[in-house]
Length: 82
Image 1 (tube, rainbow, N blue to C red):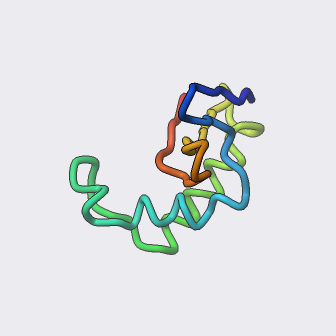
Image 2: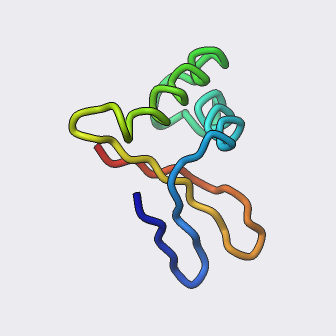
């Protein structure tokens, strides 16, 4: 899976150490207000593990990237492609 860059952003593959960020996104009521009901923490973690393994086990493969600001290295978003 590829890493992409813009002048301001780094878009890199999801990694095991992204579990806290992923789970925080999917359990946050305000963030999820236009997507659906926020997930319970255990559901978010289970989904994270499924998404993380999907790039090698799913057919066709599914890809998920983390979007990071280059200057702060803060994770600011998720991007998926199935």
